[in-house]
Image (cartoon, rainbow, N blue to C red; front, top):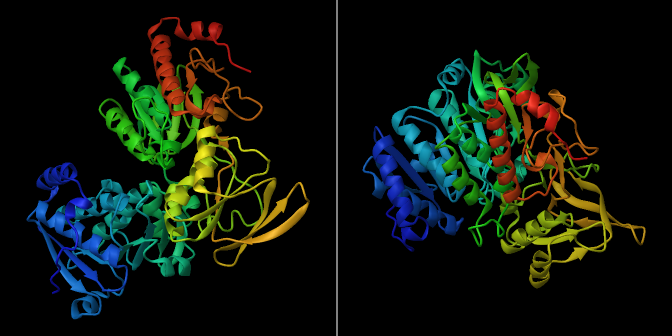
Length: 554
């Protein structure tokens, strides 16, 4: 066993306040002792080796049930465990096959911490039904989830893998791979985005998967898209209000609706927070001069969960009006509700050029905070777009050590003046009057074909990555199911004074309403929608009143 001496102090990675919270959590959640074996090799990822050692020591200091030992890659223990990469951390290796290949920093620390608690108790984050489903496995499954410290969607997918390894330890092993520290492995599998999941070496999904889809994919090895269609809901649940979408608009609506006395649920198919979650820095939200998007989301969520029921990973399959109720069918449940607020936001607009879909997750990305970490240390990327998002992404990438160039189809940027000024100070170059015509490569992105539309000349640029930030397209599928009137470009027509739509007792809030795309606007619209719903449901002639007063914007 190797004896480690601290080169730096643990408080540099984890603050005293956070330590206190972890200690309190451990005292409640840790049941049996849980072993953690840390493997490092001098000269390989030294900075991350030290971080892994520090984190393990902190957790051991905070609970005598966390038993940590330190080893060297290449020693007998490493050979016994099959460890070849540095750093590697094993959780309860005599009971489970769970390893973190790379230091669990940032967002990854959360999944590591919860992984310890699951291994200690033997209980997982899965529902009993999903746990039983995993237990039918009779074949080996190696789950590899590629993650990064800045990815807000990674912890949950990592926990899915860990939970599976605990639910069926004789057949399932889980490896959480930090993408930056293991670039050779990432490139070998063609994984340049996070989270990405591989089972038995085969790619099985990009992004965060619902619990049901993850488990069914693991058990059946079917495509996630095929699996998601097969999941069936249970018995109907009655609500006053169903809010679809867990961004700022939906979460705020949930707070106000419950405070008004409405029996409410917020359902979100992905992670809570929406677009803000992947926004590096927010500087224009009242009360905060400067705050990370994920940090702001965490604060909103912390407040929302005190009031409303929230379901994450729940996908709406059908929404119809039935007599006096709306029937909302998801992959988990059927809701019979008096009113609906649609706050499903908007998704990234694709370039629709050759190679974009082929190399998505293999060098093509729509999320700089999720995937930019891989391109540190001078890798060359382009950021396509000219608005606030594109310039913010370019600044973020530049600040973490990526060589970023903006490609914009016009001769002027649309971004706010202060962002353009920051970009100029940073020396980020811009290719004006230019459009990407094709993204090329073999297993991963290697180059792009760019046309200067003014000069009518095309050239090939060698790049490692392409970040696309050219705007959004509305998530209006549910609006279409309910027959709502839409604008020419697909946004919901809603009265800005009430957020009523063309269908009585259906309201819109947030980016999907087609207004100014700002967090403060979304929060305001969520408030208005909830209060209008309360007013309409409380009034005996509420539906009639709504039919006669709604005025939708053109």
